[in-house]
Length: 116
Ligand SMILES: [Zn+2]
Image 1: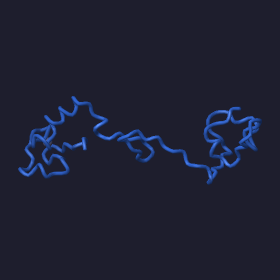
Image 2: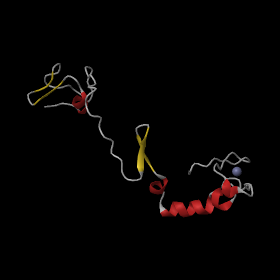
Image 3: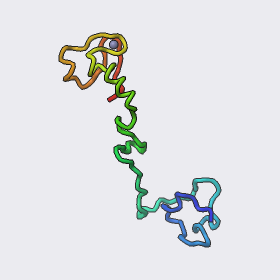
Image 4: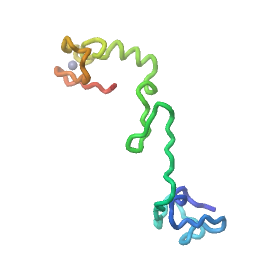
C-alpha cells in the first residue's frame, strides 16, 4: 500500500491494511499529500542525534571536534590568532592580552574567525 511518510502524522490516515486513508483509498502519487491534516496527537518523530552533535534549526550540526581532522587541528594551532597572536590573513598582531579574547575579527584586514 503506497502510503507516504507523512501519512503517519495525518488525521485522515486509516491505519488499515486495505486502504490508506479516508480520501485517498489507494494512497497518493508523489511524496506529499494535498489533503494532509496534521494529527496533533501523533508523536513527534524523534530526531536522531549522534553523540556530540545537535540539531539547530532542523539541521544536524556537528561539534567542532568532529568536524576537524587532527591535521586541521594542528593547522589551527599554527595559524589561529588564539595561538599565534597574529592575524592569519594580514599578519597584524592582536593585542598583548590576546589570550583573553573571545572574538578574533582582525581590525586591520577584516579577517573573521569562523572556527569557533
Ligand atoms: Zn588581518
